[in-house]
Image (tube, rainbow, N blue to C red):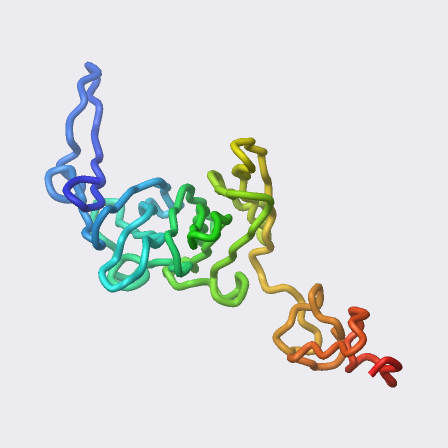
Length: 232
């Protein structure tokens, strides 16, 4: 970060071990991007096609708190306007959001991990983007997930596992005692056999559509699956 901008620099090393700016990259070896203010870069990765993915945190004008950002540059340091909106995409969890780690899957899917602080506590925050830079609706419907574990929860590392899992690592702090934490997320849509918008794992009646999840007797078997609700 330099003067409130995201800055990438590429260098070359000659055969004598001297380091020089690569003038074939960006403008005289530098590429920059202004997304708002207080940009902090925490992730950098290269796709299989050579394009560069950079991620971090930014304060955007008109938005409360800070947000995750991800941007893509070509191999030669030009902002890739085909990605997201004009080369960048954002994830807003509605609070003070801090991105701390980046992962890129072989197919170009991108994931960021960090935390969101709504002043009521700090929680794991994960965002997933499609290869084109859109919020990935296959991940939790809106491309975002928040997880509260045991205390002040901070995610510091993220990795794709196979084609349908994200593993996030970090810590949870309770009264100054930190515990190591791991969490796994499914990156593809969970089954919803009755297509009522509630995944089978959470649905009190996964065989009959019941978006309202009515369960009069609170037995975790929805009224829609009970011929007669004895307690109702």
